[in-house]
Image (cartoon, rainbow, N blue to C red; front, side, top):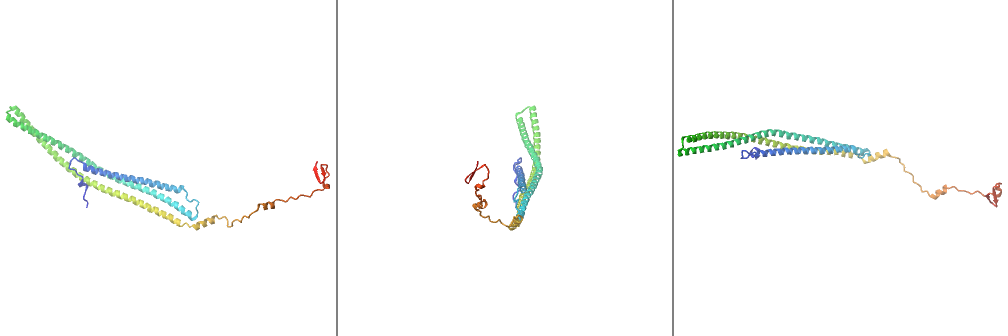
Length: 326
């Protein structure tokens, strides 16, 4: 059971004071400011999500990842890059969702501001009216008291006049002043009572408007807190859903990785790129000198010619078995 309401808790005994109303108004303005802060928070978070999402998308487009892989691992890596792109798109979509939430918060905040402006206009008017009427009442009271003092003084002068045996002219003047003071005192009294009555009407009207303003502010505050709480709740739900979506995307990557069979990839590479099934023969040892003997030709010297074999040529001179060019 509630024990405190705005309409019961923001009064002051001073009829000219606006402390209670000002306190409420400041609180409502603070609430609007808090909504604006959350709205800005959502916009900043949206900008972060969008940048991150775009960076992920660009990463998958510009950065290779296992470009030369083949068969099942290649398919798994292609799926991995595609799912990273999907994650990026999810963050971009989340950014758009957050901006829409910020827009709704802005519309709610501005709607409450416009509705409250009507109440503020009424209250400002009634406050000015109350202040003006209070001033009139205070001034008329002062005038009434002044006229009463003047009447009392005139009555005292009449009393002294009767005792001091003044001449007729002076007495007439004093009696005329007394009569005038009675009239002005009565007029001041009527004006004062009229202003008192009018001030009471203004006070009653102000109290009624103040109660209505308190109830309106309380309802707005109820709506604001409820909307703010639900907005934060929705925001964290969106983040949770984002985690669920990303986890689902990651699960798809895990499934493709489960389909990566090492034996098949190795067999696929082997069948597609094999260069032969026979290894080279052993390289024999070859002795250098054996190779030299076997490859160097043997030069055999011809038998010496006898003297008779020397040509009959004067260019030759023969000495025993030796011949030389002359």
